[in-house]
View 1 (cartoon, rainbow, N blue to C red):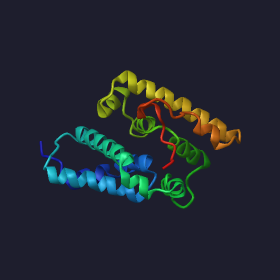
View 2 (view 1 turned 60 degrees about the vertical axis):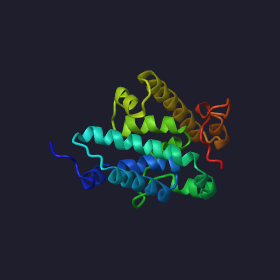
View 3 (view 1 turned 90 degrees about the vertical axis):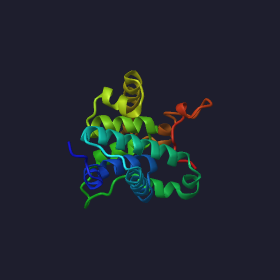
View 4 (view 1 turned 30 degrees about the vertical axis):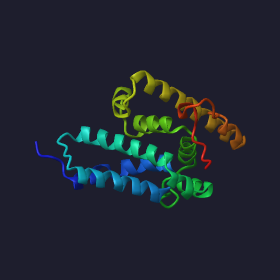
Length: 191
């Protein structure tokens, strides 16, 4: 079977990787840099793929890892203001065609922990099964299933709070910081 070209991979997966990076960074220019970096490293490595599904899973895993690196980096700490993050968190509204419901769901997703955002995105938007997501994220199926359940619950609470007109302060309390590891913490947008 003929190996897939870098151009074919970019054409097929650039938008998906950009959406994943946007979910993590909340900043389109940074998300674009991350995606370009992924393809540049792939080009430099000389790695080739013959299986399109494997290539997509590899690129998604690369994007998630690169986003985690970005979130830990000093560059992020210096470069993102809360106003910019809020404005850039949503995809561009193509002429006002995003419904209020879609906008609310996307805003609710931005309030989730990165792990939860990944699982929600891969499950609902990319239509991967829990088993496939577990392989991509290198986690057990039980962990992915648990994250999906928790993410749904958290999104439901955020959306209900918005619908009831409650303040965002309650939504920020969904995953309070605690413990010594990052596993129990949620990215709140603070720098």
